[in-house]
Amino acid sequence: MNTKNAVVEYRLTNWAQMIHDRDCSGLSVSAYCESVGMATHVYYYRLRKVREAACERASSSQRIRSEIESDVFTKVELSEPTTTSILKNQVCFEVSDLRLTAGSEYPIEKLTELLHVVSSL
Image (cartoon, rainbow, N blue to C red; front, side, top):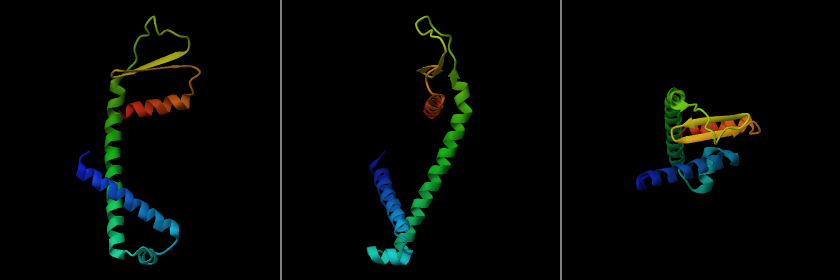
């Protein structure tokens, strides 16, 4: 990440916190802005920028997710167990250079979560 992107992310994070604080305060936008010494047009500008960034991230995340979903199943290959990894009730997945092995005692929820994380790599 370059310096300009870092500054933008820092501002967006602070502005999102400001919007959250205003929501939690129960004050109207006008009353909140007056209490912190900010013009209302500045508040609305920051709100618009935070919303735009959120929409952009959601769109980008959806695009990446659909790309991953279309590629994941072609990249995942089940390998034949080797003599060193044969265990009773064991499942083994290989994704690129990563090998995941889990025994029957491993919780299925955790395995599902792990596979979801690996699929997003």
